[in-house]
Structure formats: structure tokens, C-alpha cells
Image 1: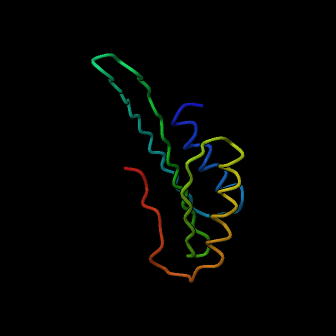
Image 2: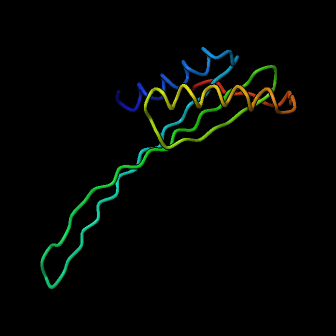
Length: 101
């Protein structure tokens, strides 16, 4: 899955578990490290890091979870946790997700 597919899958999971409104944001970073010993390259590596933020609203109750795994099982589990958090939170009529512009 590419990054757009991952975010779309997150939204689908949130809506599937029963949340009325859903938002998913994926932040992907890449870091390249170069180690040099005595003027010779000792190691060159690239590290990829992902942060997936899931937010859902049900009956003006909001739940949010942030994870660093982007496989489908982890996203589905996190969607369930968002629902649990939303149901445990206090209702607030100001909780909403702005429409796309």
C-alpha cells in the first residue's frame, strides 16, 4: 500500500468499527546516516519512520490514537482502541472534523 492507501484504509477501519466521523493522518520521515572512520565510509544506512494518527468521533465523543506500525492488523486494532477511547470520553458539542477544502 502506498501512503494514500494507508490513510484511506485507516479511515475505512474507523468507520467500520462504528465511529460517525473519522480522520487519519500519516507522517512518513526518512533519515540517512553516514559514518566515517579514518576517512573511510564505515556505514551508510537509511531509516524510515512512520507515525499514523487516527481520530474518530461518536456522539460528540472523541478518541485519538497514534501508532508507528502501518500494517493492516495494527491499524485495525488501533481503530478499535479509538472507539473505546471515544466511548470513555465526555461528550463535547465542539468535537468535529472540518470538511476537506
